[in-house]
Image 1 (cartoon, rainbow over the protein chains, first blue to last red):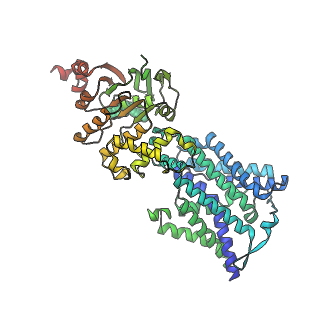
Image 2: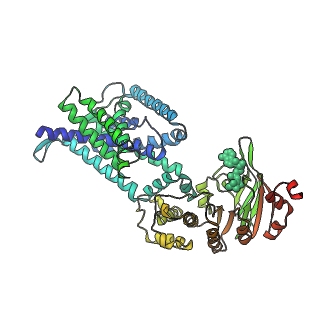
Image 3: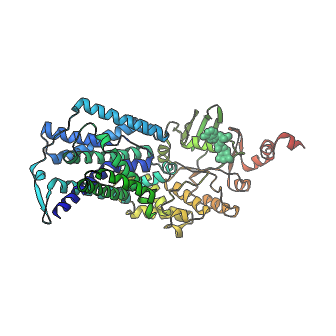
Length: 287
Length: 252
Ligand SMILES: Nc1ncnc2c1ncn2[C@@H]1O[C@H](COP(=O)(O)OP(=O)(O)OP(=O)(O)O)[C@@H](O)[C@H]1O
Ligand SMILES: [Mg+2]
């Protein structure tokens, strides 16, 4: 019982990381129709920012999180403005080849700078301890991770559904020409949105170092589950991505724990089943 | 007097094809100016080049004497040059009010405070409702635009353009796709706009053109054939030829 609860919590925290990794990809796919397979590189950047700050400069872990968010966001913004925006109009195959190339380049760069090895991180004692949640002993870091990701998800939903920023994004997606016709600089708006997605991945990468580890293969390691989240959740849908991430995280973790031999394949069966039942993703069910 | 909107030798080429070939226009402030010409004459392309939707291949565009040739469309909108399109350009999933409201916010640069609520500003909402009332859609303000009849949607487009507070407003066939009985209503609404606003419109229906325009430019094959008052244009042999067919047909 206690074991089930802690496995469940592991699953939820993995799901939350998947959400942070994937939400930017989902948004850029939904809004800009850009298939960015290099999105995982932003998570890697966030991870290296946190590891470097903690291990080399002794910055408190908590302070490195906004730094990881910001650095990944800025890198995303610059990358979008300099190269990526040129690819939006290309056919999907070009986008896929281009972004995969970008992911390999990021991975190679990380190997040169940080080496191929796993990066260790020493969490502060308040995160490394085990706490009791409703009588179940659980890792404090898991609870913290879930809390941070949940806050980020809520803020993101509010930003898109309630604010002027969100209204402009929705308008630009609805009708780019009309948006420009009222004075919206759509190109810049998309760059900011792209940067926001990159920043979320960076935050995820920083939070993930402890539980998932960090090495230069990061941009590829979680590509499959992230793509699954986007496909199942429906591109551009924040609630869809959240639900898909959690389901995927929990199911994957549960089965890996319960039946280690076939566990890793269960999620793929889930994907196939989902796609047969809801070919256009969870978000399309409500519509 | 400085023209409200002026083009000098404005040209747009698509590959080897010259869609607009060296157009000089000078539209006086407060004008009610029609742009006419047969299908494919380059009217829409000329409008695109004036408003910055396509880049001019040569020549220049001036708004109140200021060279705006190198500004992108959003920047031209902010300077007071707005437009509507030949086909409906709306945010279809949003309500009439939301469509117009967003344009109000953009103009006020309220969007700099991007975290602000999209529906919480009473003054902006009141202004948006004024624009909507001006095009006679007050009772439909809270409907999603896709529920409106096509003619009403075209009115929403005009309200959106008005919300940018243009000094010069260019309308590319504002009544296209609307039944003839309703198209006059659209032009009557346009006629009721403030006199100081400069209006340029593309229109195929000659009855509407002669009724509402004070000056007319005739575009043929990307070039200005002639320009004049409705009386001058209707008396012009060459214009009649263009509209009635080839020379041979005319002579027969
Ligand atoms: N993007 C484009 N690429 C190539 N040719 C184009 C493009 N847009 C327009 N043209 C051509 O330029 C010419 C002028 O087109 P335009 O749409 O400006 O004419 P128009 O006067 O607005 O016609 P209509 O009365 O049918 O609206 C046409 O021959 C058209 O085929
Ligand atoms: Mg046209």
